[in-house]
Length: 149
Image (cartoon, rainbow, N blue to C red):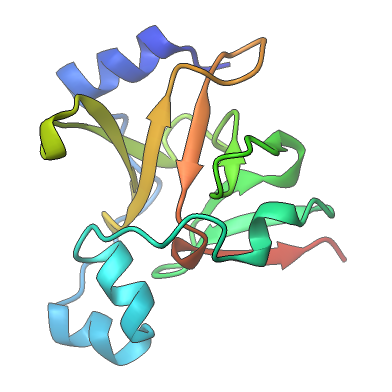
């Protein structure tokens, strides 16, 4: 189980290697993503809070990167944070996401990206529920839900 100190270590000293790497040009990403998904994932945008139904969906399944399809989060780790964005306590694997220091907007945050394709997903905070204390606050447009069969 990842804790805040693990997140800080990865953001400071380097992330674990991904299972695979997906590299595309900006034009290639534009061809396969909606305009909104492109702005969020490739240009580090943020959707408006409470703009997605995904915040209130808790049925079983996996959440994959909308850009490359890498499995990122499991519904078992999803919770209602009340923030207006889908929130999770843990990624599916230690190397599923990457962490980068983000000092934009006069704040210190840790940005979360897909470790396979570098898509911006959101940020992770240390105000989540026990036992990890982590809250991965993600853009719904950066994720696609795969239901259990």
